[in-house]
Length: 362
Image (cartoon, rainbow, N blue to C red; front, side, top):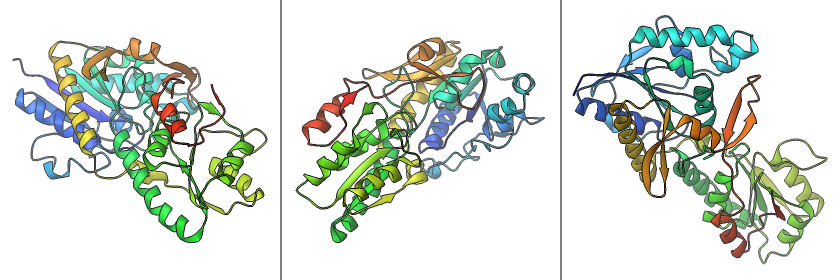
């Protein structure tokens, strides 16, 4: 087998499982006698001259730390040299040319890019940056909003982090006879709130994909046989005529109805935590799939898990498989998004459990 030079980088938001997939790719490259380098700080590091890199060997990365959250390579600084800041400054064309030259100077045979739907959509849109090498993407996000894959690295661990957080809140909720309105991450996708909500048997789960009536929510809570519980609110929900954080808006509605409550914001703990076994297994499967794709000279592909099978799908199919939306930070750019579909089995299960999930599925 011919020796190859592989690059790997993490981009976008943080999540657990990044170090695990990095370690699994390192192991696979070493077993194939390939050289592998890590690009530090995502596109920030790639923008530097020369690019910020580190040789990845067994000694460069403590194997015992591979289950820890975060990325040993770091994901970059959102306020520094990346697609968004370059777009705001009107320098996106020059930025892309700089990235392309950096990759060319590194003389890579392949690049493994670990990112969410935003990073993958940008890779699809600006594929000329990666000309001359094999580009293989691995999906990671706690939002699980990447089309053409049933699972993303970091999601399961984020669900567990949220479940553990709510389990503890429930104890103080019982002690003080009050409700907690917990705001989850997830952007415009309700998967995180839905999964965690079913796991903890929340009294209500409000997600962007399902229209709800705040008055009916209040009625549901008042009819509860308990005077305490958890209401999970995805950060992407809106209430006509109201502004502010979603959890605060719901809290005000409950207060007006005389329902004692507090808001809680788990925030970045959802991106932390020791990587669960399921995410570690997913990382191993995605790493092996990515390296096999490189062996087969595939390019512009994403690793995927569908119907119990690890495989690759083209970035074209990834993008076409979701619902396009305008990138809020880059004029002219589009992201491809997956959402909670109306036939999602967890919606049926939640309703059967007596959880309020809304009135009408969008």
